[in-house]
Image (cartoon, rainbow, N blue to C red; front, side, top):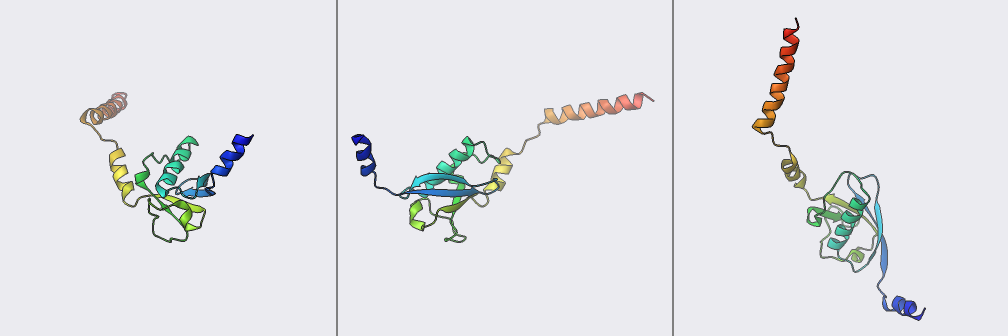
Length: 135
């Protein structure tokens, strides 16, 4: 019992219940962080919670691809080196970095190979030949 009391007395850092809304997701993610926690670490925690809960759309796991916004900061993204408690708010919004969507789409776009394009064409031609020959 004494060890628990000493442990609680030794940790005098304030904790915050933060709510982070992810763009495109159904609802906010809520969790407790220390107010001295860096914004970069909070982004990482949000991505881990989001993935663990199996939410959609799938975001990925690279914190460098995302920015965190605060209602007080307006349209300026929070610096990853700032502490989360320095803003005086508990509600945030997580978004992908601007211009990143196009790069991800280009990388994720399926590339048609000659073999795959030939196979569907062959199937299409065979299906047409079957219909024509049945006259």
